[in-house]
Length: 321
Image 1: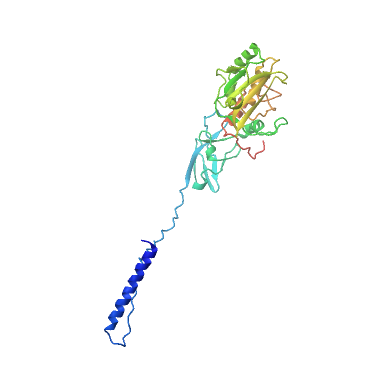
Image 2: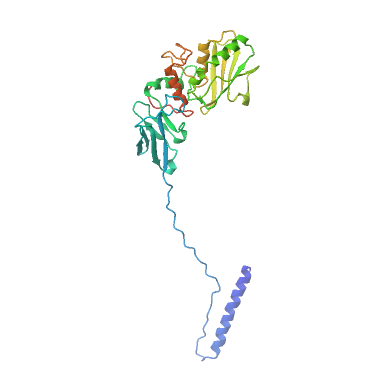
């Protein structure tokens, strides 16, 4: 029914009621006052009772994990007892295996936590960036080496940040310009697998490499470590890696085509393909340019374990090395 029709019906109803009232009044004394009765035909509108405003708030969230020593191979999860984990005014300590649990507000379930322990560099990190379910602390006696590799600016590499592989790389050897002896030397050196020690025990160089005629380009580079040969390279070889937010996706070593492939220098350059490329020139090390060993020492391996037990692009601590 349209609004106009509804109004007409209502008006007719009112007129009818007025007529009835007047006719009834005719039988009464002349001095009586006629009665006019108007009846509303509108249906009352029910006003809904407002529902009470919800005052429920999300329940707090329990964050659990391990506080671990980073010097051990990837995934070893050697816990640090009595370490402190704190969020604002809420604090807990780890048990004798390094395990912790802490309640935080729902809205802050990935907020920065403060993690500290005696003998270790303090750490600030999001729970979502735990590695293998753990926050890995850097021992103070190892921090100098980790700092020099990751964060210390050098003249030829002024911008350092934490970089690492998150997948097994494919080794590619470009034969163009190289002799068979040079290629055989590379294959022999890769088979010694110092690479596993350089990557926290996660990855290996003992995999069949691909031998090609030219370097891969574009998307074909992704996931590869390319070893090629060119004239004029100073010092035997040069190396670099490319990353996306700290995750390395391509690395390259270029060797002087006129020089014998040297194990010591090749592993030194390989180290630059798995990290930020810094040097430890303060003790004999595969990472050193002045006392290069070509072999991973125990201290080298522990420093590299810390790098590979860290989330990509780990922030530099506000701690003096």
